[in-house]
Length: 364
Image 1 (cartoon, rainbow, N blue to C red):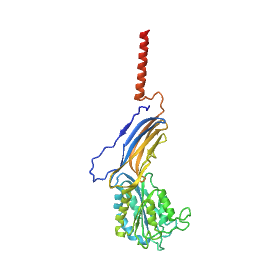
Image 2 (cartoon, rainbow, N blue to C red; image 1 turned 135 degrees about the vertical axis):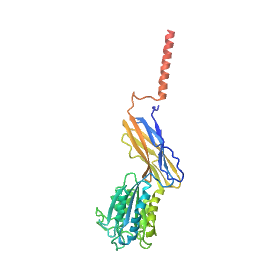
Image 3 (tube, rainbow, N blue to C red; image 1 turned 90 degrees about the vertical axis):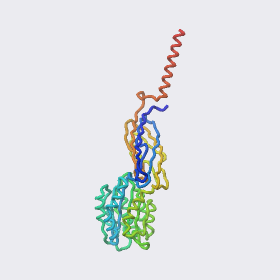
Image 4 (cartoon, rainbow, N blue to C red; image 1 turned 180 degrees about the horizontal axis):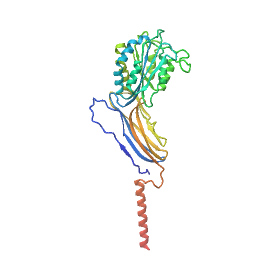
């Protein structure tokens, strides 16, 4: 028989918010607690709700990578002037950090600079964007692939973040880069750049300021290949005047559509095993409507102790909602209170023995 458990579910308050308002993604129940014997399991349903409209609870890392060769002067000046509004708009998505990098024309160890490591301070990100400059180039292809590969590898992407790389330039990249262009003296090919980006689950939003005959996509469809391989979008035919609105569109596009909803169980402690079924829901989703995704979550007691931890709802790998769990694991034995079924059985047995004893006394 199952043992009597202390099971507490806490649901978050439902807010009366107009339909036009921006809502927050959530998990229900928002908290769960129970007591388990070692080796005992319990399964409950958790529901991740992904709201329509722009999210406000997402954990997002946005990295801005710009071509800083001479022809990029006007575009860089436009982004500098509007950086504050770009950063503020992106920050509204929730817990957002920003990083800034640049690449030049000649491929080599100095052709990529990570100017600003990921930061939650907009002023620091603004200073990184202000450090962009337009200089040099002139050889045609630039250090695009090297810059993308280094951005993926050198950036300190946060655990559980949705990762967006906004890349803009006006010329294709060397493919492959010359030997000696990386710290390991290897060559960076398009395939290498894609592999590095995919390894960190980075969504690339490419903004092509060049022409159809000479732009990001004019050698081997590099930008098309890279954005397709990372689940991003290529914005082509963009001019300097529209680059700011396009950057905002690129960031919002990254979070308005999604393919995978799951649960991040990584913070479950050693004393409790936690699993989810299904592991994730996969499909072509968007935020035009509110959607719900159900998971059966199983907790198993492994060793005695009281364990407090969080489970996160994720959209495309980025955490969008949090719920709290407390699991108490005990070793069992005589101190455990049997369940109501066991108690009833014991009482019935005792009453039967008393009845039989009294019957025998009367007969004697």
